[in-house]
Length: 543
Image 1 (cartoon, rainbow, N blue to C red):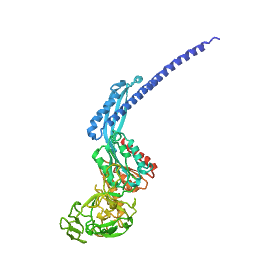
Image 2: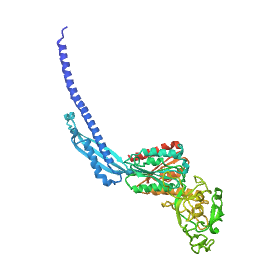
Image 3: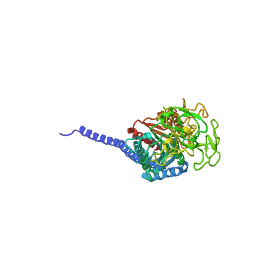
Image 4: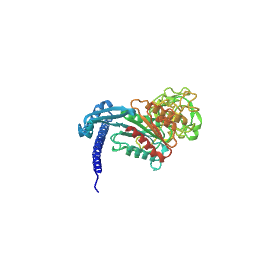
């Protein structure tokens, strides 16, 4: 069939339209394709720029040395940021131009040192040049923080923790949890140490950045820890603070992590010895075996702690144990052989009998809580242990000829010590939110208004007040800004633990002071998780 002229014309017209449409589409598609290709280039350059900015900020943050102030390190940190940026994104790399890189080093909240690197460049355009765009400005930011960690663990090794040799005992589980906690920190960057406390304290491991590789290591010392004694929380907490003061790094994250399984009940004080007669709990009998029948001894069986007696001062002599003359509260030798003497009687005892004070720990032994109005109180016990494996709660001699380190003298302070001072040896007040009611204060006699050492509740309340006041004083340090974390196990005093840590649930929570955390483990099966939670919180702050 032959095509008509009209059909031939129609075919030519369709070909012409196709050419026009193709030209139109190409004029649209080419810029779109060019835009896509340029976008890919911009995306790749943006990624490289972000990587360079991140690397620069991380390198600068890591260069902030432990112990130096921010002012001492700011210039070098900036230069290190620029050096690392240039190493990863050289000048004119990938045909870029107009590089502007700015590194800012600042100390932000919670004593965190932060390096911020802002970088902008002009990225080349290729296909978009057809539309008049020769380059596009792109920017990236990298930010990294560094916080030096100085951490002192304060570990309760009291007798209620049980034997370290029993794998399921709180003592053994706590040691394992503390070791796992230690392993979560970075040697060479973080500084760790620990103090263990029972009736007294011992520095188990002095703060070090080689806490894993040192000899002995912190882990080795933790494994050797034995448990015994009372609960001298205030002394241990304050000594941890003293360790932080010695390190003295205001720019660091300074931390005390306190673990306890009971109530504070031990106080270390300079104890005044009695020179007058007063009334107190205890049993009295005459001891006719001593020279001139002048010593009065006490029967310290538990049942005798519920009855009050009018007691003269300590029967111990004051003077050299090697040779006379001696001074007693009721006699004074007239010659070197003590063959004759002057006698005294109440209330005018021998004025030369001035025993002064003895430094030691006093603690209740009637129970572990604020419940006992009568019962055992013991001391003075030496405030320190010789090692982490030392479990000897040695009694300090009352006066010069009082035998020490024997079970018979454990309660001698009920007879010898006049009263508990209003401060421990670190200046922490034994008065505070736990008041003293009923029989916990002397209500008559020469020591009226003073805290009794022969009432268990009085010593527990004084120990709680001292621990609470120690934590408050530590938080008041606006230079080092220490944080306190508390881990409680089992039957503990939740209120004092919340107060000491300034936990948000504390009845005295103060948002203007460093906010800590109180974590409670009801049983030993929860102890590892409790330590891990505290470690996670610390590591979050340290980033």
